[in-house]
Amino acid sequence: MVSLYVIQFANYILPLVTVPYLVRVLGPDHFGLVAFGQGLIAFFAVLVDYGFALSATRKISLLRADSHAVSETACNVWAAKGLICFVAFALLLVLVAASTRLNEVAPLLLVQYGAVIGGAMFPVWLFQGMEQMVFISAINLATRLLVVVGIFAMVRQPGDYLLYAGLTSLGYLGAGLVGVGLAFHRFKLRLVAPSRAGMREAFVEGWALFLSTAAISLHTTGNAFILGLMTNTTVVGYYAAAERVVRAVEGLSSPIHVAAYPRFSKLALDSRFRALLWGRRILLLMIGLGGASLLALLVGAPMIVRLILGSGYDPSIAVMRVLAGLPLLVGMNKVLGIQIMLPFGRDRAFMAILVCTGLMNVLLAVVLAPALQALGMAVALVASEMLITVGMFAYLGHHRLSPLSRMAAENQALSIPKGRK
Image 1: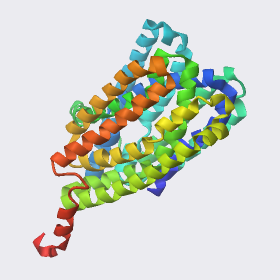
Image 2: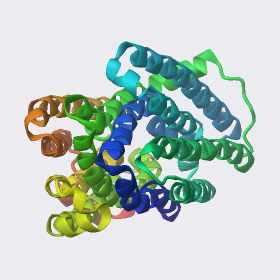
Image 3: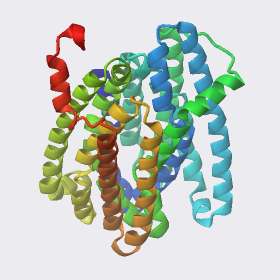
């Protein structure tokens, strides 16, 4: 978990350090333009990941004692990612040629696609499944630090938005290359020729989880792009700046979920009672952390916006207050979904809930954003997360997997002598 917090520091806190500088240097218009491009590129990143972050992690965690099986699985996953990455780039070129709006920002999108390539190489799923994150955390932190230094040294005016995008992509590419090399060295991987059967198996195992992560992107990373299609880049800048800060707060709990996922996969196989008991404990922890974050963001939004973003971003204050509930809702949803539903093999139900809420987010955005603009997008996002929470609690309660309703049975089970359990 500590190692994952290093990665989280690199992924969230370091970019947050650059936000006060970037929003002032680029201004709402160009900052929003970059966020618009990142929103579209995020969809391609989800496509290339294809749910492997969950499915491959789960598989590696069960096979890690067999070095040949780990090597074979890793090579098949990398090959599958490479194939999707090539197809996704071709799709990006088609979209740029077909859309006037996208054609206008084609250089930005092509530069930002480097982050997709780097993300495809970066083997977080492998290190996570092996529960050895220390070295890869160091790589991630080092490359992101170099990017931050480059941003402060080279990005000086609004016209440097392409340079900012390029530095970000280089960071992902560098981390990906070094991560692959470290994976082969650390785990003594052998280069195994990918097989059609192995790649097909990887695609089948990740299919339901891919649909789930694609649905998540409809109400998370892709919101800036959706908003930009209906408004303008300045509005996107106000929304993206507020969301960036709230997501950084939300992300502070993510290492707990990521570190716990492989362990919960084994717990669900060994002991239903212990899995639900630990699910309850982590859920209560998330409620406590999320509630504190909600209160801090609600009360402190004016000060946070003026301190981090500047006086030119006053419209972001209301957006931040609407989004203040995200750390609480997302923290609960990750416990219910990733720590309980997935380890117990409820992939399809997990997918169905997320697909429905993702579509609802887009529908609400189409209805609310034209009139309420950035505020409407924020309302749509929070409403979607609330629906996920209700849906997951209802499903788990119906199937007697709720970490809350099972507590009495767990206490009874724990009181039975060990030989009779």
